[in-house]
Amino acid sequence: MSRNHRLLNDLAVIEQQLSQLIRSANLLSVNPADPGAQPPNTTWSPAIDIYETPGEFVLTAELPGVKTADIDVKVVGETLCLRGERRWEPEAGHELYHRLESAYGKFERTFSLAGTIDTDRISAELEHGVLRVRLPKRSRTPGTSHVIPVSSP
Image (cartoon, rainbow, N blue to C red; front, top):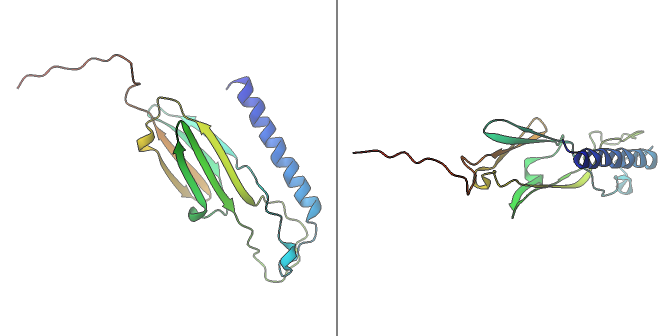
C-alpha cells in the first residue's frame, strides 16, 4: 500500500470519528416523536476494503441498514462511483434516545479504475449490510503481445 494511500485512509478514518463525536455531543437526547429531533442530514464515509484475486479485484463496503434501492454504483469514464444514503428510521415509537453514534445521511466514494479492469463485467451485490463489487480483470491488457494459436480444419 502506498504511503499517500495510507495517509488518505487515515484522514478518512479521523474525519469519520470526528463527525461521530460531534453528532453524539449534539444528540445526547433525541426524541423520534419530535419532528425536529432527527439527526442532521450529514454525509458519512463507509469503510471500504479492496483485495485482489488472480481473476478480479473485489471492493467491499460496510453499509449496515442501507437498502439496495438507496445504493447507486456506476462507472463514469475511468472512475467507479458509489453513492447512497443511510436513512435514520428510529426503532422505538416514542422512546428517548440518549446516545446516537451510528452514521446517517448521504455517502459518496469514488475510485480510479486500472486499465486492466473489464468495466463491462463489473457486478455488485448487497448481502448482510456488506456491498461487494466485483471488478473482473481483462483476459489481457490492451496493447500487450500474445500468441494466437493456428488451427487446421
